[in-house]
Length: 185
Image 1 (tube, one colour):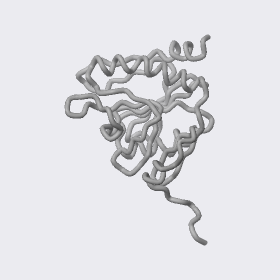
Image 2 (cartoon, rainbow, N blue to C red):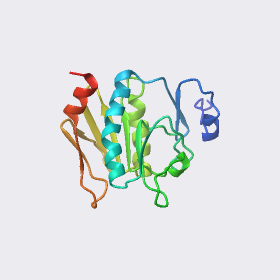
Image 3 (cartoon, rainbow, N blue to C red):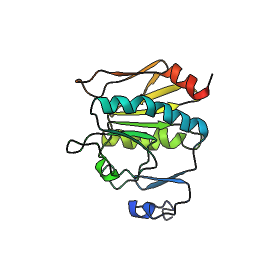
């Protein structure tokens, strides 16, 4: 019986209509998600508000968010919720092609994206060497931290620490405080 699974290309995905859906391509698999819910966007914003000043103050590159068309130099179309790209030739990356392998990728779970974020995209991010991948679960108020060689995540529900290089102090994110702001409780 012939294989009924279609393998998509980057060019085909980029040619899809701008219909409000998020299209991603991971190893030939087309991932489609609808607009995120409000709590998702509030969570993304709270992480952005903590990461952007830290990244800028320490010259670590740029924090950006989707929609995006990241490639990771492998024919993919990836749209992480938040990601940090290293400086390119002494300046912050600007165009999507300037972003190579991000130093940090963050996905905030939604019911429609949980499988993709936890399995498909996680495996891809680990394979290409993303140093840290955070899967944020706003409902459970925790973050699963993955590194390239991990077979299990480290689950954090207190202080989330990010130390991208030995030359800068760590960024500590108070998750209970962050989620209190997200949920306004």
